[in-house]
Each structure stands twice: as C-alpha cells, then as structure tokens.
Image (tube, rainbow, N blue to C red):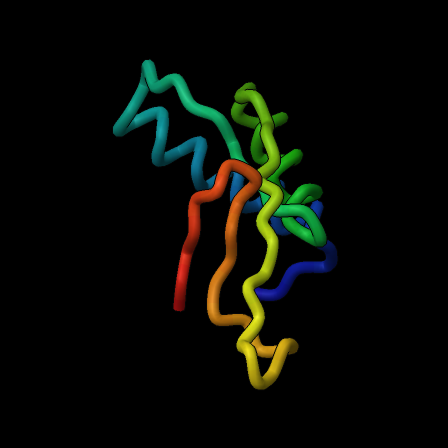
Length: 84
C-alpha cells in the first residue's frame, strides 16, 4: 500500500484501527504515542480519529563506539533503554 503523506497514512491506519478496536475493545482507555521526526503527523491523525490523547516519546540514539552513525539502541528521557 502506498501513501501520499504521513497524514494520509495516519487517516488510513485510524480507519483500520477504529474497526478493530470497537469490536475487540469497545471501552478501551488508551493513549497514542508518537516518535518525533515523522511519526507525529501519523499519530496526530490516529489520536484525532479515535478521540484519544496524543503524547510523544523522545528517545536518544545510542551509537556504536566504532561507528556513531550506526544505532545499537536508544534511551528515553526517563532512562529506559532499548537495545538491538
């Protein structure tokens, strides 16, 4: 599937999620989390369509010691890490 923009992708994903969530989790209370640098427009459209709050996760890349461009993990603002 091709998308014109991230906003377009968010609208299409929101439609699919709405169908799934209303059937499986009709009274679900949730938050949409987005990552800066691209995912915010997508997350905004999903949060808007599903009437859910939007919040951001601001991670920092952990670069490889011999090649700083290569990411070996990430750390969030509260210190949680994800390593690959």
